[in-house]
Length: 425
Image 1 (cartoon, rainbow, N blue to C red):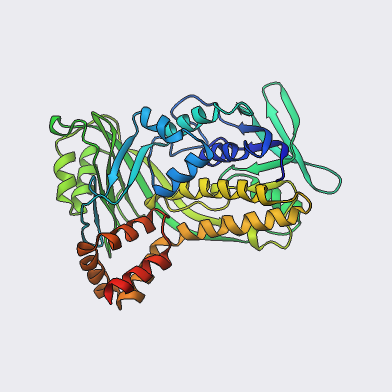
Image 2: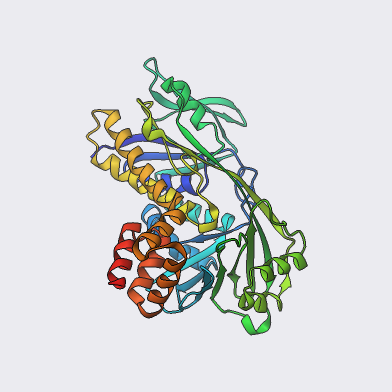
């Protein structure tokens, strides 16, 4: 097994923290370099800090692998945990899903709290340090063009910090792709899709009758309906209500407008709850303009000494809550690739890891279309297929479990298609 002496992770978001945790078992020392000062609930590099984030099944598994003890610390912090699907009330495909326990959980918290807990879990690793208020200015290279460290700007001036491996977790709009293009002397292939989705979060004080209830209520877009809403536990006496829509939908700026948005989803159950709640914060908007995916795996050569993770590779549609799943999943793939690498040929490591990272991106990025194609193929037709699927899920707990676990990235779309075909026959 290869073991690095020093690794530097650029970026202290979830992807960077998970990468540091994953690398701590294959590196003598890992340093996380974060430009923003840490400690507050917001920071400039994460405009969605206060927005609700769901950790689905894959995220829970992979973050726990990267940061042992993370889930216990998150639960101790007061994050919302609920059983799927008896405590998660889901309206999708135009109807309510069955409510029965399927054997896994959903977790939610604002982004800043998840990062705080991840840093707390990481602090238990003696060979990891997190340096905030330090900006990565450039990659440092040797005469062959291999990356040998990072040029860092600090309060005392610029300095070059040496490293055997640099992990770029600077995000979708970070400088990493430009650095890699310059070193590789070829453009990074990229796909870019306009999105125009927005999210608005509001903290609510729960009515007395709902104090301490762990349940989630979720309403996903269906057909021509572009709006969605999610009500999740923030604490025993607070909810976090997150509503979303596309560029043609009005962005609510007041609580009455938030209630109008929930009403427009035709979700009477959620509206009945939030209608009795009292707003505890102003509506907080966040916009997703585009989805970018850097196809690093298609490059003819990749610079030695640097590898990307998370949003640096692709920013996943936040609607389905899979961004953290993919980032952490890539981090464990990186650790596993390093363990299997003999240390002789860098191209072997970079190729293996980038291929695995791309597979994890693809599993999440296209999940909505992939699930719909599977339903259409297995049941015949889109509209009739959805109706048939819902009927089968109603009577089959096993099919329901596979369907939901597919959205949690715990089952493959192929497995879902096979299960639908089996139940249909």
